[in-house]
Length: 132
Image (cartoon, rainbow, N blue to C red; front, side, top):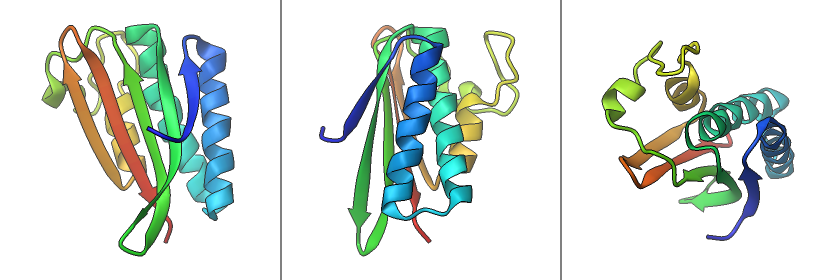
């Protein structure tokens, strides 16, 4: 996979991934509002890596599809995986006593959202936001 990779292992890495996503979104031509939404979605999936898997990476890239231009964000970890994906995507659900905004919040902020997870093998979240 090509794209800018940001290793995620601690809180400071979340900030780095967020900033890299905002910069790429600006280069692609997203509005400042959309840049903030994209950065927030990146924060949510990166925080999940730190909290649940301890280590992973965010891959950021420009994406083009059928005349549309956007940003693709892939969050990958080899953590414990998600046992119940449907429950994990429910607003307010959290196993770590957080607000539970993570995955469902990121899904709402982006246009496309795919969660792929297997217990014992890790999780991959692929998100896209299309320029309007």
